Length: 503
Image (tube, rainbow, N blue to C red; front, side):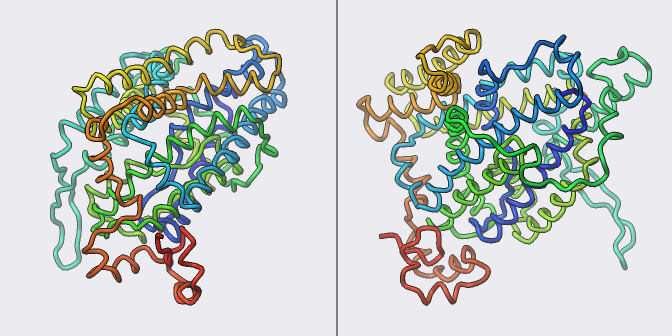
């Protein structure tokens, strides 16, 4: 796809549209916590592994230049159809483990030493992509990193004065924690202004990726309004290698989201989420990923960790606020020029943001080590091998993509994608080693982890069972149809319904 192809804005708009749709479903009949669902980097690692297969590698640049617009369009759309089908079908696994109530049993084997490599390798595997974007202009990328660090860490507790007018009170000053709420947005705006100054003064040569006018054609070529629809790039295709590769992204998203549910409930002042709410939340996330695949967004959906942090800062934990935000996202997804704005951000700025964000994802994964005894040589062995070996294997397969030769093209593709997907290899290796190498529960972090994840296994504290039972019901019940569900005894056996009673 050309750098200034308007279809780039259509893909962004599609993701925003699906985000609004899935978030509304999640807050209304899902886990019912004020969580925003959206695109996730966890699917980017298997996506790159799939596109690195010989049949999906792009033609040489000189060949691309000679191709017609129609042929170039088909070139990226056929790849998008492959990714869309893989994303949609792999998400069925998340739907099954969520609505089937299986997630609680899986967590007995998903230990901290499984989570650390799975999540951390999402960030570590993408360092080359961050470097490619940042290397377009290291000065601007470094400035982006410095400014984002200043806004999000150094000035985070410094309030900013704003003049507002209130009827009967006139003008007065309020102090707003601007840097705490919008560090990324502020960084992008300031650095974009700097790039614009460098563009106007011709400090940057014409066509340089850091110029603010290098992709302006996308805005003019994008229509004002365009409604995303399922199959807009053609009917999604399904291959075994693609589905199994994307399954790694689904597993990473599931593990990551589970930790957000109890955290969000605490921040909102809500009771701990019961097992049926968590089952439903995971199932709806899977459904959202299926919709994202069918709509052709090129990504799945997952709980936004940034949204969880924002709730803690603003103290606004209202479902109604998020549902109104869903309406705005649906509207923004229809306004195609809004999506085009994200495409024209100068590439070095994106590279600087990537350096920080990918690093944060890696750190989020490493934070699970707080439950583990790092003085244990057993744990250090598992951690080191499960983090290092997947990177070695992936790098080797990227360099030699035709190495796997079994005599069957389908098997070759499946094995190549699985072995080159670092989060799958790392997570599987960590899970296997932690469950077969002898070690006591305390050193493995299972005792502390069980306390953190006890809600997933259906345990509710005594206070909730006695005095706050009605409060829990009102918080996590469906907004309609509850009287009908309570009439039927069989609903107490369905693990995603509010009437579910754990056996």
